[in-house]
Amino acid sequence: MEIKIVNIPKIEDPRGNLSVIEKEVVPFEIKRVYYLYDVPAGAERGGHAHKKLQQFLVALSGSFDVVLNDGKQEKTVTLNKPYEGLLITNGIWRELKNFSSGSVCLVVASDVFEEADYIRDFEDFLAISTQ
Image 1: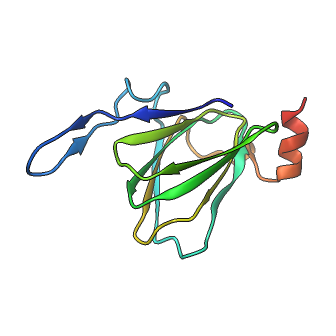
Image 2 (image 1 turned 180 degrees about the vertical axis):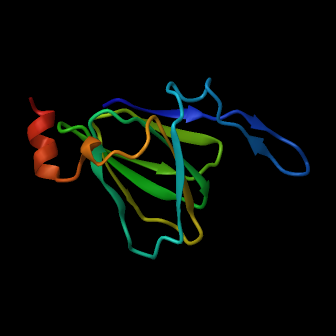
């Protein structure tokens, strides 16, 4: 499964820490940035895969689980540090669950939104991933 936890450079300072996501952190050109917040208790996000798009997820605040599936195996990664990100390549099904109160998920993407790049049905995903 092509996923990777990446350490984001952290500049520590008594006045507060600073982390920077630049081209050395993510292996793609950043074309879109968005964030999820105010996720109600018990709600889930994601539930899709991408044909081409790659993403880098960071828990800016709080924590959440990312359930990943490549069609052969499933893995759960908990994100809870603002100086660590999860790199998800294309062809990986992802679901975001168990959001803590006040959590914020930053998503850095390799391309702009394009509906045709999404695989939104898990059975379709499995059919494609086993080819």
